[in-house]
Amino acid sequence: MTKKRAFITGITGMVGSHLADYLLANTDWDIIGLCRWRSPLDNLSHLIPAINRRQRIQLVYGDLRDSDSIDYAVKIAQPDYVFHLAAQSYPQTSFTAPLDTYETNIQGTSRVLEAVRNHKKQAIVHVCASSEVFGRVPKEKLPINEECTFHPASPYAISKVGTDLIGRYYAEAYKMTVMTTRMFTHTGPRRGDVFAESTFAKQIAMIEKELISPVVKVGNLESLRTFADVRDAVHAYYLLVTHHPVPGEYYNIGGSFSCTIGDMLHHLISISTAKDKIKIETDKERLRPIDADLQVPDTHKFEKHTGWKPVITFEQTMQDLLDYWRERVRQSADFLVR
Image 1 (cartoon, one colour):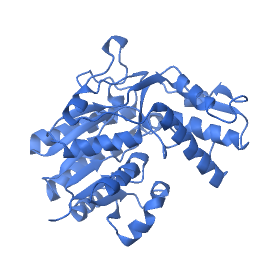
Image 2: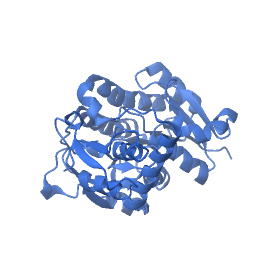
Image 3: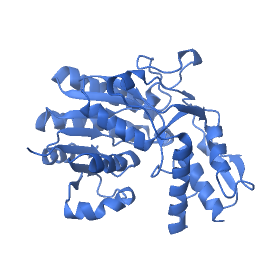
Image 4: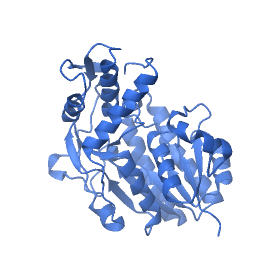
């Protein structure tokens, strides 16, 4: 029997690299990862020997803004499963680069799905939207279920509304098995340093090594978030495409531990060897013009359909994230303070 093939866009990112790890460990599938030729390969460094040997995993180069490259990549991949994770994923950047965000996330998703329609229409496709589509949610609507009104609070969130709707459109218009997820905050090792919990962990690791003064720069600490571990997230994505996939369905996925950004920061500080000297300082450049400040999911629909539940605790996730940055800082002192 022919082995299954999975196509992962954004394989060099935190989620894409962890998904590759999960699939290599838990399936016999071959993996084809899409990345830009200039993408850093740090998150895949442990897989480079296997990639060089094409031992179940290979990379193809492409860009979501280039139709020909996406068409070629999907034609080469001939996937049974598609995980469309690639995006301009940083909300703060979207305020200064909205058009790039729209082009990458909205038109890029359309290019991926059109290529799949042309070359492997029967593939099972996961389109990754975001909980940011819900944006400004009043307290009386918490926890947020799938039918909550979209009220995006950034160009990034607007782009993910487009991503979400394009996924469902292709399922309905072309009878493709496309499903959309709105993943709430998920983090862990390999999280980019532009995101709150990761920049906090990086700054703390640098403070511990006395590379910067003992001050953690922060933005809005009042936002409420529900945290999940990236390793639980990729398990959910695997179940999404393998456990009775329903064309056109859309699911909220997220963790079970909620706290403010400030509480999360104080927890990270509490497990630091420098906890007694760290101070906190607001950096106005880290504040968004508008913030999606209540992000608490209702995940019953997805859990009922797949049986998935998060298993990694908030405490373990934060410990692993801080240890990840400690190791990065140990290897190199040259990091932007951001």
